[in-house]
Length: 389
Image (cartoon, rainbow, N blue to C red):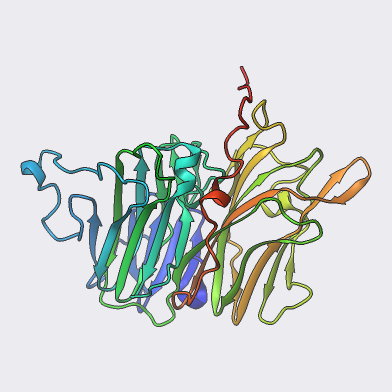
């Protein structure tokens, strides 16, 4: 796909490439695969040795061969988890072996802002007790602030705002575990049904430099003037920054997005090696922000109404054709600078983010995860706010 030093590179705008030993796996966004050898003739569908496909659902919790659709004699007897109570964690996947998760589809019945901010998805690789992924469900699948939209990108989608999909490849050498926690308050009403499917492949082995998928959520409400918002830090290389989702709740008038994205790597201290020119520029737009979607960058939410008098914004950026490699360490930040009648000025707004990256081994620790109050504050309209007619 994109991480050459971990065996990933780009072939085309709709093709993901993962080099595994002498085989090359090409996966397009829909999940279809063309597999071939190094000396292949382009386009030949060569099938790799020792690779088999599996899927885990609530009905087939281990992905066992011939075990799908067995409940009630195969008449759709157990298609979902009927309910995940407040405080409960359910395990979606917990298997031994070597392989790659290719696709995750999930849809909760409760898709309210509070629900999507307080359903937490976690992923663990190769026996690690520390989650490599720890993100609110809605933010993980591409849109911040607990909102749902019809989103179409290369690596996450919210189809019709209801079906959440992730196509980032997630390799594991010995073990994979995926959980969802309902961290709603104890007095919350039942969440209702949770449907999911995890599509993966089993392999004999992975190259030693294959990266493990990671994703981390952060929120600062409000940010501190003259201090950059930190998306990601303390990452040990070698690795590859795969992209991010950023949400902004503007707390004042004027343009909020003059801040520059900065990538510190391999010993950078006071100044970064890579520094952009503005927030909307980093998301490949210009001269402000509005709604748009492309495979690799977009703005899925740009809301301003009676409920949120200043913009409520969500944007995504996938680093595929412009990979960000680092060898020793990595940190990503973005400035809090706006533009008004008097030019540039320091701002303080409500920012949140999900950073996605690959590194060869699971992380040793994650930063403190924001608690329910910090995750949920101000994502709903103020009491008594009128909806726009």
